[in-house]
Image (cartoon, rainbow, N blue to C red; front, side, top):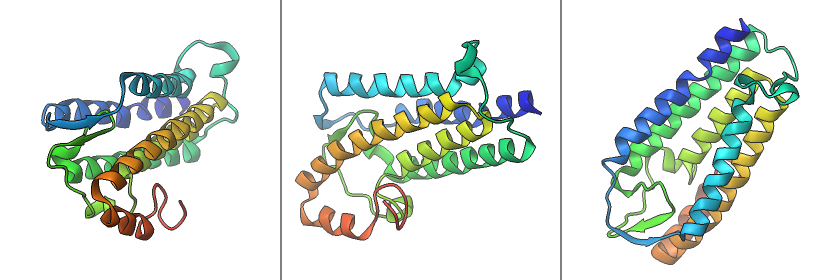
Length: 191
């Protein structure tokens, strides 16, 4: 069952990357303000390291690839279910954001504040979905490296959130402050 869950845990990620690649062609290009190249590269280094740690289960890296526990069918499929739920949430959020979406931290020309759909549940639902996908894969793989990758991904997104929120406050002022007071950043009712 381990090989099956390892393989099944990859499927949501393949769907995610295919969806994001296709939708990236529809993103509005008129950027009014974007993060620096250094900031973007720092985020990418954290992201790539996160994915490397998460995927260590599938690579011949000795002890780093070893499981903390034997992810039986229940743990493996529960992790995959969390991945699929995170994928669905991230796709819903990406669709709701529409042309305002950007791979980098950016404010588009005529940027609008999206408050509906998943943005009424958390302020950063794409990140919530991706972190759920990471945690689900870490549960399915059962490696310390996978959980370390999830933690590193959380750190990367917390850093990105700080920058995005500062820019949203500058762009939308009191409207964003009111929104932030009402809706949590990543986890409903918690954080």
